[in-house]
Image (cartoon, helix red, strand yellow):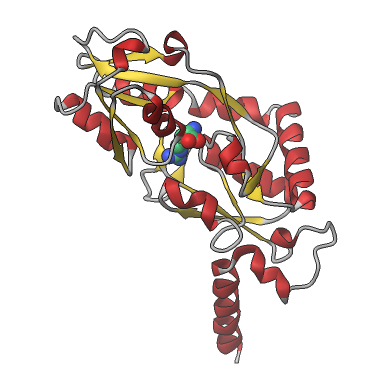
Length: 259
Ligand code: ARG
């Protein structure tokens, strides 16, 4: 009998995971008001192709700053954190169906704000330009007419779309774009500052890492994407972020994961 109940429970948990916050329809109301927390599990979408924020660790499961950070947030909220690794381009649309929230070095943009809310921001970044070591590319104008790679659906992708005459090569993983840069198939790759540093360090003699500020790229703020209108969840997550910043946990994770 115990075993059967166990199996049933697993089945219920699995189905509630699959529908994310929707699980709350039948679940008892969370005392603090967020439907996403009612089942005791926060299902978090990520795209573990973005070191040092998220990558697949040696044990085959997602690791990185964002993963450790959201687990610390989960601890503050008293819920279990369940990570779902998926394509970056699917993260926003998965919120409210497959996942509750997403953490993925995701930049707050007006377009994304049409479909999701964001937590308070937890990190500032800027796009960087990776070029072959012998490249003469040094300014925004130099990128015009070039073949430039990026990860599909990222802010780097949106920047390339605006560059006059540029041919935009979109990849599911930024690392694949970097490999094509090294193989001579691309003139440049546009990717966020920290991952750019990690990727470039893998090819110290072949790849130059140029700061996008010299190309006129603006500061981007990373935040956790949340279901639209769940103010109770936003309130609790924002509070947890403030607490983790105040109590030194955030700085500890920065030291642990950032170069
Ligand atoms: N910051 C960029 C954006 O929001 C890139 C994020 C890519 N993140 C990832 N986990 N692959 O579009």
